[in-house]
Length: 257
Image 1 (cartoon, rainbow, N blue to C red):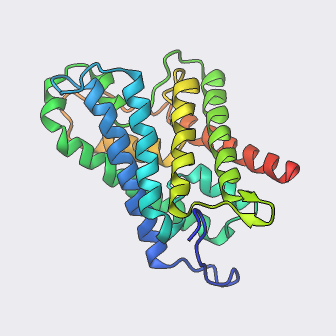
Image 2: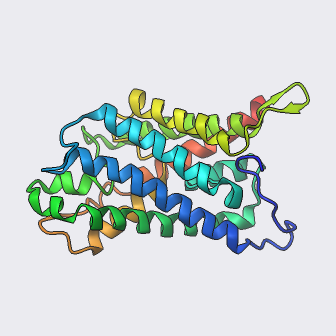
């Protein structure tokens, strides 16, 4: 089965199969477990990977995306990201009636994944005094808080991701599909890697509303010692910015297609 391609019921029924719903939950949970897990390994005190740097984080996130997409692609098409889901829907590659259930599944999966990170690294959360570093293992924070620039950063980064995804979905050689099946996860992971390396230094490149919002909610809920606030005044930027980037990518895909 081709990446992002699922055998849906007729569009008029707008019903989502349970396997697709669970596939999005599991895939997103794995994505966040490995993605926020690499952040925890780098920034929390007394870990083996402490202070190993930005390259480790970006590489970890790229492989996290590959793993989550590879595992869930046969079941749900492996969106794992509301901006991808919305972008595919705007581009006409995904039924509108399935958008909300997919986003719900992604939010549930992200909450599960980030909670597993907290459980695994709990002794290191206790050993870390900096509340900002603790929050960084859940959600993003800009290095320079300038909301218009932060919004643009998230929008541009997500545009690159979703536009890349649309090219993976539509890849062909002549009249033949150039799909690699579940291994279509590899170019998507590489796109996430280069977005992090090239564009992630401003905001931490959420580029995924579920990846940021669900863990931020869990940061507020979980009993994390000395966690500080969850920075709700910024929380809308890594939600609306990526969604806007996904829509712009889809519109460009339609215009150039």
